[in-house]
Length: 319
View 1 (tube, rainbow, N blue to C red):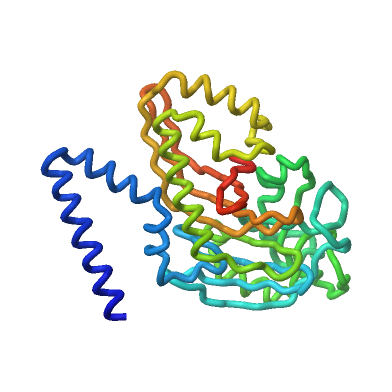
View 2: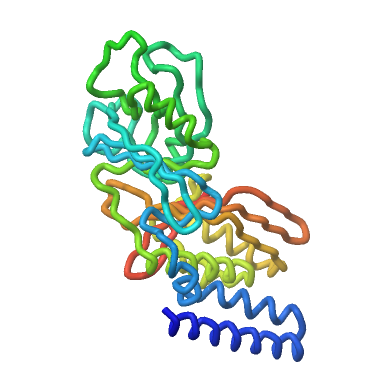
């Protein structure tokens, strides 16, 4: 441990000395450029994550993680701590009548993926119990796959206690446990992962690869390097407006041809494993984006649905 701390001390000392030289000879902008380069390096992120638990993903602004496993019929609620996950609750659930990943309205299946909780509903029909937490199904990736349907909730049991052994696609649990979950979380700061079987653990190597790729993608975007930028996209890509990769590439080539100076800042980066029925090693990236050119400004959410294959990030869908 002492050797590791000593090594880190020397690394920081030499990096600081190098940055001082850059600042002295080239100015503050050059220092910023050097720091931006560090963010594109996998080694930087591996060092940053060395003492963090990332088995359920990496979260900078999401504070609660809800994991539902359909085959096990179990839900877990975690508080995302600085370097770990604190298990708050573990309860039994019931899910859709039919097995498999939801595809269309009325197929009686519970979806698989990563979803936001968009709002809380009360004063419902007694069938749904005291409250319901509404999920963001179908999300951008679902829509890219032409999935449809709506009204996928986490809700309670009928107040008259006449229970079925399944739902029409929602996740349901006993009312007391549902109310306990509601009291334990802030729904707007939560993310829900629904898997068919046991949710595979993620690794620091995978998260480091993704974080470095996000900043490499941003650098290509900032520099209007269309070839490098498009290299991050899958051939099966679709964006939130339904553009295919070919259509998206044509659109971006027109934009990049202007060679505009761009400011692109990402904050509150959250990377969640994305359970799916496609046998892909997928992740959902959700972050705040501050984008600015001379004539256009955007401040809002950026969603990326990515596949990690052969240690390379491929964007499958974007919103």
